[in-house]
Structure formats: C-alpha cells, structure tokens
Length: 95
Image 1 (cartoon, rainbow, N blue to C red):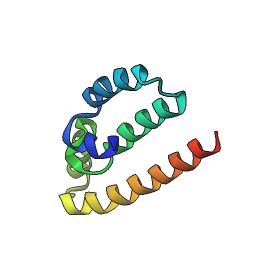
Image 2: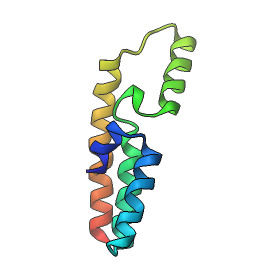
Image 3: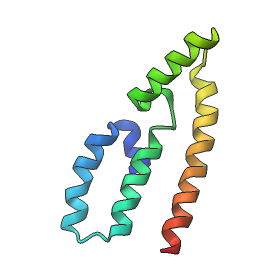
Image 4: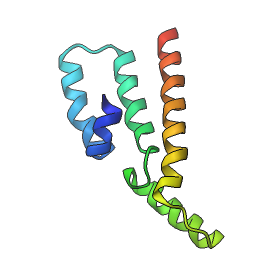
C-alpha cells in the first residue's frame, strides 16, 4: 500500500503520516520495517518519484549525451521495484 501511496505523496511525508498511525495501532517492528522498505523502493519506480533520481538521470544524460526517456526508465524501474519488493517480502517473511 505504501508503494502506491508513495507515487502520490513524497516518501518522507508519507512515512511521517503513516508512522504515528502504525505506532498507535501497536505495529510490530516488522511492519515498521515494511513501511520503510516500501517507501524507499517506491522512489525507484519512475523518474519523478525522487529528487535524487532526477539529479542522477540529468547527470547521466549530460555525461553520455543520450536521453533517458520516461518509458525507458519505467521499464527498468518497474522491474527493479517488483524485484526489490519480492526480496523485502521474502526477508520479512523469514523473521
């Protein structure tokens, strides 16, 4: 859920909104780690999701003289986000 919401709201404000609710509901450390992980990997989904991603893409384009399109980035970003989510899910399932 926080991966989806992180696409609409920046990651830091999302965690700032969600964390007090989780703590009040008596969330486990596993659930808090899941929030941190999902808000972090959500920034990898599309170019505009994190300011750091925009800066890195701009620098890569300057150095390579090639343009990275939204769709090119999305193809890699979606794949990496799904893979990262699966790894986090597996890790959190073990503990």
